Image (cartoon, rainbow, N blue to C red):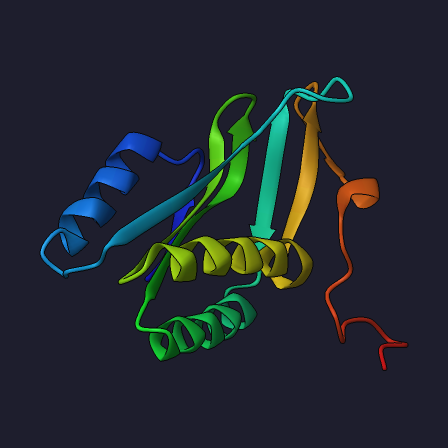
Length: 146
């Protein structure tokens, strides 16, 4: 399950909804990860652009990996502006065993940072500035990609 929202995420509601959806699914572990915009470099927040076709394909690959381990993965991400101390990203793994969920969430979040087609901009005084120094090039992208 991949959900995209305009603006900041309502963390308590999303996590409660996910928990309620899986409460009777007999999973022994529910491991959430919540990403929050932190104050750095004088920013007022972050803004996000998403290329949904590639994100959907990338996430489907992760759903299949989770299913192979008897687990499921859920993710929510913001489009547009998210201010300081608000959340732009939530992921959660439900699995029969805690070790699977703990390892899976770590690998998933790291690959998300490296591979998801989401572009981050700093918000400074109402202006969006591409956050180049904190961005990671997506594997296989660009004119000279190998």
